[in-house]
Image 1 (spheres, rainbow, N blue to C red):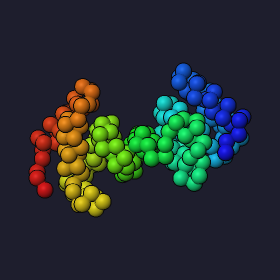
Image 2 (cartoon, rainbow, N blue to C red):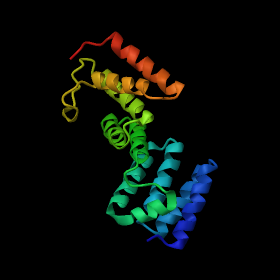
Image 3 (spheres, rainbow, N blue to C red):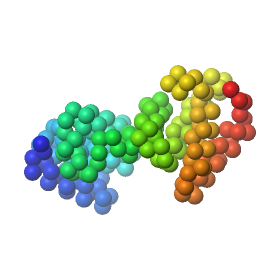
Length: 193
């Protein structure tokens, strides 16, 4: 269980994060981690701060560590500190976003997929996964980028499916606009598989 000192440092870190003081938030999370190496919430909050600073490699590592620690037994600390549950789609979305920003499209897609499995109406995860599939398809212009985990369906077809799902949901106008633009681009060059 997390010590009072570690919980206090994390509380200060969360407050600093919410006020945009990312370096100070990271320092407070470092303090919480120094006091309790198994403090999953401290790794999670520090990951958010790193992501806000565009330090995507560290953000991805901390998201992964937070989830690993949550799986290994410190979930009570995480719930207590952030009211965040282990199987929260947002955690997978955040980690997917960190991988996406690093350019690791396969890991991003895997994390977005887990977020969508947990919350099938997670608009941001659907949209970002569609974008990642589309980017991965662009990197392979022959259109043969198949992923066996998705039934051998080409990435462009998966992106089209995700964009259509976003458009079918009650998404905000910006998400709808991005989905429609991606869908239009793919459909203009689409060859059914």
